[in-house]
Amino acid sequence: MLTKNGSYISFDVPGELFVEAGRSKPSGSVAGDYVAEDGIDRPFVRNPDGGLDLRAGFAGASVTYAIDINSRGDLFGSYTLDPDAANGFTGYVMRGSTFISTFSYPGANITDTYVLGQNESGAIVGSFKTTTADEEHGFMRTAHGKFKQIDYPGSVQTEAFGINEAGDIVGRYLDAHGINHGFLLSDGDFTTFDTAGPNTYAWGINSKGNIVGWAFPTASDGFIGFKLLKAN
Image (tube, rainbow, N blue to C red; front, side, top):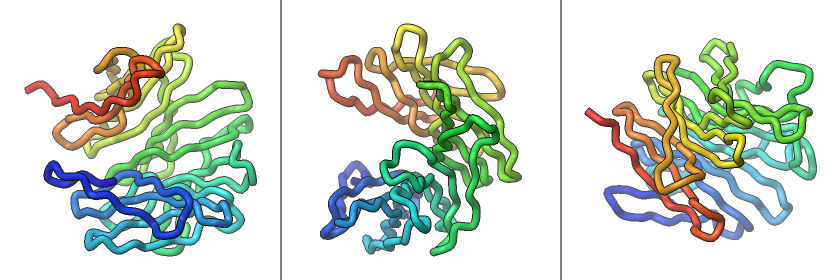
């Protein structure tokens, strides 16, 4: 589903079992992935004219999800060769039908690298998991391939979801009480916030500093979307 000028536009990949949309560009291009009848998850682009560009997944992968797209049309996401898609996720950048870059967060104990957002300057954010159960950290990868770990101070888990051109990063962190909170990392300083109560996920931030995401105060409340405007 895509929102444009306050209206909702729904779309599907005909005949497929599952379709999910990732991020979009102002031009109207949308990144996403779909599961075919063979059970394989592959990436696609919905073009501004509504046409679908279905892409082949990474060779041998059971899942190749696409979460973001830049103005050039490059896709960003992760893939895994694990038939059960339980681990082994590796980040990628795809240009046309070619995977021009694949990468994992450095370290011998890394099990998964999840790409979750990018900006036009080439910076990528996401999270990684290790061989320690339930351990998860955020990361930022520069356009030159250098990694930086991101953890909200005192958190049990951290994920980095979005980054704007100024380098401001948003995401979520899990505290010691099992509650998720949204965060903003700007100029090296963290700000935490909750919108509709506990369990706030900050998904994206634009050039104006406005933040979007969702929250679910309790499991029975369902998801509540939000837009947090930057104070002037």
